[in-house]
Image 1 (cartoon, rainbow, N blue to C red):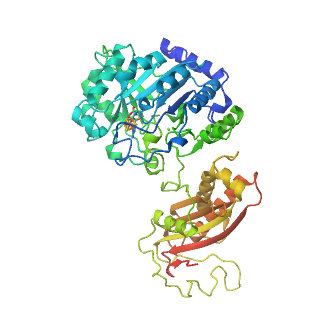
Image 2: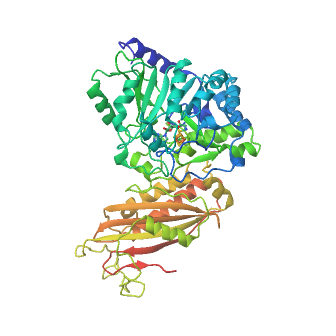
Image 3: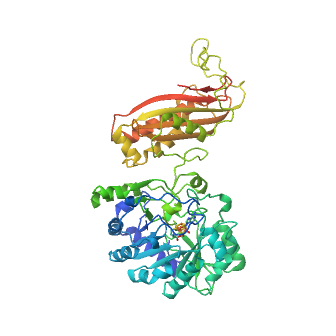
Length: 565
Ligand code: SAM
Ligand code: SF4
């Protein structure tokens, strides 16, 4: 309801209502109605700094030049997205200002009808020098990263010199009339949290918008919850100095929570991707320097627009691919602890800020999606080590009455041979685990589509994985004489193996109880395999589910079992 609200709020409401009724590209609208009108393009993977929070100390492996987007490819994609309704493009990287053709790219983008804003996120090292060119080419907005106001600390954080050049760049941007000039500061405990008030003080005389960013986990940046300073903590600290800090109305899709100290020229904001995600209003898409479309900063699903471009795909075909990827965008990312476990690119290979991940298991282990061929046995070994089974797990623990650990007696029949549930009341409560596997031979067509995450029904691997976990939880309802038991943990992985075009499904279940979890593990892999079949059956019915078997079992009265064949 807008009535009775202050004027600014009413305006925001009207804009919102209008935006919701105006038509928008179906390709850029996701399943939750989010319209993606903001595109971030990474122009390069290279950088002249080595920020601790962004990249590992040893650097990152750069993509060969031939696989990076060319000037023409960048512009073709920009044109396509703007034609579909993108209104804002942010150029980022790596360090965008070290790309030699950056001014040409901006000048060409400026010609795109419908593109309202061109923004750049830069570390500021080259900014003072190229600023006149940027302004002339048509840059509207500047975000400059600066994490410390103490030169030595700046150098420690970015592992390079250049503090004064960044300050010069910020000053020059203000001089040239950019207002506000956004300053991005990643706040890390023990490093620069003590400078919060100094950064806010900068906004007194200058039209700066200092944005404090919660430290986010990416591959190789050694993220740790304790190093992250939350928005609430930062706000609390700043309010002790400026209790009258006033909140400013935010734009509907903005990532920052904005504030101003009354009387100050500039303002401040918090980017709370970790403690309070803004996924609900996310309107951002990203293209990496090697041409992959990422629909979520924290998602590892990517689709190579470059490959489609280079194979001569038409605009219509490209839009279908983009539309399918946007359509699969998840409602929100999975939270900071899950993100910190997941495989993603280092930040420098994504470029820019902004919130998903597949939740793998009841206790939050992240899914591994193999990118290269791995022999089945290796996958099995890795699965064991990943799932951190009980420490006494070893082949030496084979204490079965039969050689393979089974008994000659059937336990699920009574004296008359009728079905009977075993009374386990006298069994000891122990920690029990079981691991099972299944193979799904998909065939080349379904395999290719699953690998590229291009199935019309959606993300087959994620669906199969969740189906497996659901299956484990439902086992006693499906298998008549199976005891219901409390699952401590159920983890399911679905890995693709190029050789044989198959998916290897594995499940490990754990309980603390009087009876074991082998049926849970076997049900999990079976249900996951069936779900995968269901996801793929529209493209091929020549799919074979095979080799469903128990691989290992520990913690039972009769000792442990490990399959050797
Ligand atoms: N090189 C440019 C720069 O530093 O501004 C653009 C690329 S940089 C990846 C884009 C933004 O991401 C920067 O503002 C940087 O501070 C921020 N960033 C990088 N790693 C981050 C992390 N782990 N957590 C939060 N922000 C991060
Ligand atoms: Fe380079 Fe920017 Fe990453 Fe720092 S944050 S290493 S400046 S890309």
